[in-house]
Image 1 (spheres, rainbow, N blue to C red):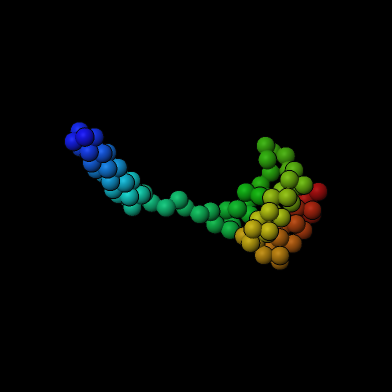
Image 2 (image 1 turned 120 degrees about the vertical axis):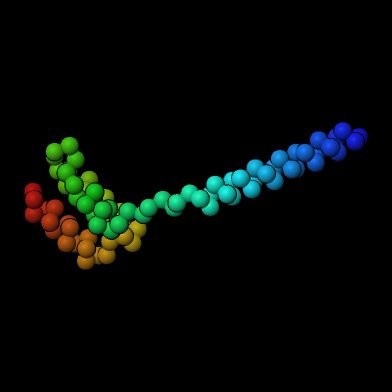
Amino acid sequence: MVEAQRAAEEGATARREAERLQAEIAATEPPAPHPSRVELTEKATAPSDGQSDVFEQLTQLAELRDAGVLTEEEFSQKKTDLLARM
């Protein structure tokens, strides 16, 4: 019985130490950078493999608009730019 209690206490101590170390690591890791609006827009409008796939780019822009990254005005401007390249 004493051995079981000792094993349980050691397990609890090990869990607390693991949680402490995880919290310490999390506190020292820098947060992942968020891409800027310009970076996301440029990625969505960049030609893929040398060829411009306008439909795919418009879809990506629409997703950015729907996610609130682009305003309706910004989406419309980029859409106009893409369609003008055709």
